[in-house]
Image 1 (spheres, rainbow, N blue to C red):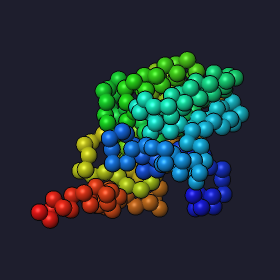
Image 2 (image 1 turned 90 degrees about the vertical axis):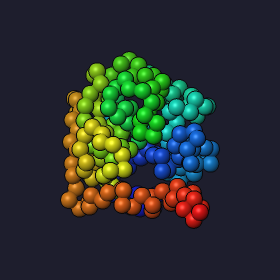
Image 3 (image 1 turned 30 degrees about the vertical axis):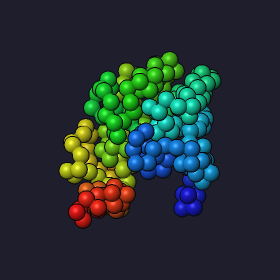
Length: 221
């Protein structure tokens, strides 16, 4: 966060699974301690920011699918800020994408938002002129649409995936997305030559040391 504060432009951020945890039953599920740490160090895990004719909304996608008071509170808040947009167009930013292969697919577990909260989001998109839903998480870059909403799964700036996971829609790049918001929205996926496209496969033991340590006793046997 100290490095983030050194940036010379305004910055809004949303948490990912390596920040606040993941699904119930995972090695590091979302819990009160992890949420409190994010909120203390980084600020709110969901937020709204108005810019001219646009309302930007950041969501904590790691809360979706838990069915607890935190998920209920975020959905209630989202309904309120959408209802109060006063004609502004809406762009929503999260860490996890809505889906991987198909807008109405089943539960993909680790990779995307679960079907029930996904459908609830679709209903809110339709009711409130949500022009853009932008996310990351997949380490693949992809653009598409769902009804009247543009969808962008942004690339990672750290790693691409080789054989560790199956092929997913989109392209393997490291980089960023430039979203231009005017009367409408346009999004450009850009590769950055300053970034090396490392394969996460080659450093997975460093990224997930806890999972590796769990396997050590079995290997020793």
